[in-house]
Length: 132
Image 1 (cartoon, helix red, strand yellow):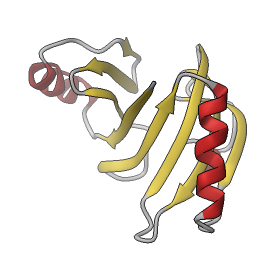
Image 2 (cartoon, helix red, strand yellow; image 1 turned 90 degrees about the vertical axis):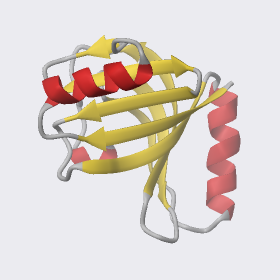
Image 3 (cartoon, one colour; image 1 turned 30 degrees about the horizontal axis):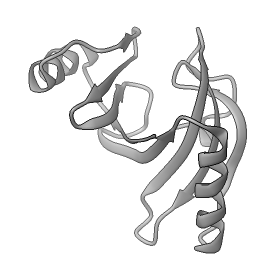
Image 4 (cartoon, one colour; image 1 turned 135 degrees about the vertical axis):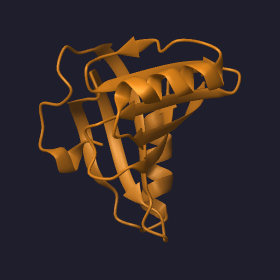
């Protein structure tokens, strides 16, 4: 299964959590002092907000997969697009341990494909450029 991912930078997490909770009709599935995430089923979206990004608004888009094999398939397709896949491998990012591959589309929008293996207690353990 694949799930669309959107990460939005916000100035005020509390106000934004209230707004998006009202919009989605449910509270976040994960919330920290600087981060919140909703794992929505309808529409099937992993929607995250945080105060940890450099700008407000859409920070990046992505596709979350359930199986490592799905990640490999998408990564191989991205390599064929010849847009320079970067940030490949395992990382701790967004309070999760994941395996990821990043690419920027022709317009410069960052896209990540990733497989989450476990929750983490820290936002990131690698340099910011390899995460979010």
